[in-house]
Amino acid sequence: MSYKKLLVHHHVSGSQYGNCLPESMLNNTTLSDSILLYDDECNVNLEHTPSYVHDHNYIDTYIKLSPYIDGVTDYTSGFIARKVTKKINCNICKHFLVDNSNESLLIKLKDRNDALVRPSKDVSYICKVIEKNIKCKDLKYIFSKNVMNKIYLETKREVYTSVFSGMDNHVSGQSLFTNHRDQLLTLIISCYVHLRLKSIGKQQEQSRIGIRKKLTKLILFSNE
Image (cartoon, rainbow, N blue to C red; front, side, top):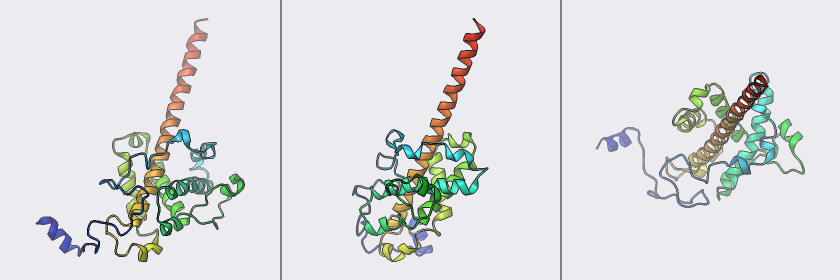
C-alpha cells in the first residue's frame, strides 16, 4: 500500500510496454536486476586494455595541470566510448557516444591512422565528473566497501540532468527507471570507475613492491 501511495504522490505512471522495453539496448538481452553491471560485460580487464591507455601515468599531474588532465580524460573517454559502443546494439544510443569533431589535443597527438575513438562531449563530461569525485577522496575511501556504488550514485546525481538531452524523444515510452539513457549512463560510469579503481590498485601494489625491494637491498648491503 505504501508503495502505491509513493507512485501516486510522485505521479509515476507505468510504461505502455509493461515490464518490457520496446527494444533492448544491450546486445545481451538478459538484463541484471541490479542497476550496476558488475559482470564481465562491464568489467575492464587491464591485461587486455590497449597500451596507449596506460603508457604514462597522466592522472598524477591533475592538480598541477588542470587543462592537461582535461585532455587526458578526453583521451581515456575515447576508450570508454569504444568499450560501451561494442556492448550495445541501439544505433541511436551509439550516436551519442562518439563525436568525430572532438578537437582534443592529446587525442590528435596520440592518434595514428585515425585508430582512436573521439568521445562525445557528454561522455567526456561524465568521465571528468567521475575523475573529480575520485580525486577528492583519500585512499582509505577508495578502498572502502561498496565504493563503486557510492561513486556511481554520486556521479549520476550530478550529471543526470546535464547529459544526453537529445535522447528525450528516443526514451519516451520506455520504462522510467530502465530506459536507454539510464542504461547508457550506467555502462559509462561503471566502466570508467572500474578502470580507474583497478589502475589505482595496480599503482599502489607497484609502490609497495618498490618499497619492499628497496628495504631488501638495504638489509642485504648492511649485512655485507
